[in-house]
Length: 110
Image 1 (spheres, rainbow, N blue to C red):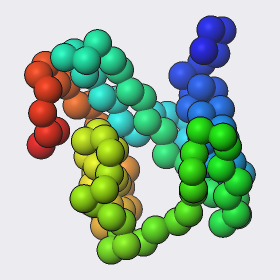
Image 2 (spheres, rainbow, N blue to C red; image 1 turned 60 degrees about the vertical axis):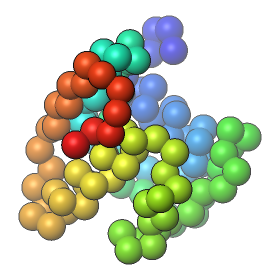
Image 3 (cartoon, helix red, strand yellow; image 1 turned 90 degrees about the vertical axis):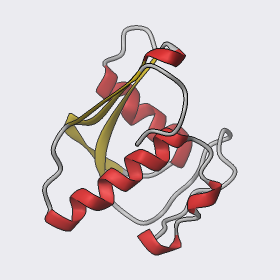
Image 4 (tube, rainbow, N blue to C red; image 1 turned 180 degrees about the vertical axis):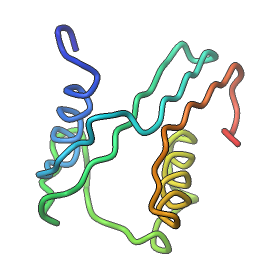
């Protein structure tokens, strides 16, 4: 949105989509530079303050999944699949470094 930082926009979108109370990280976690789609996606980690969700009108449902419960074959966007897989890999070590991913053509992000 106009006159909004990227971090503030991420927080607003999270609240609008999932309706959760959370603390957002100060720094980005993933930057997806999708030249083929003329898009940039900036992803921040956040910690939920409570397990309650109240999804907004843009979401049908919001709930928590463990890694083995995620319906991987039903994830609509390749970028979301990639970000989730990065998160679970990083969670194994407890280290969440910044990830920069650059794509020039359409297709699955490796």
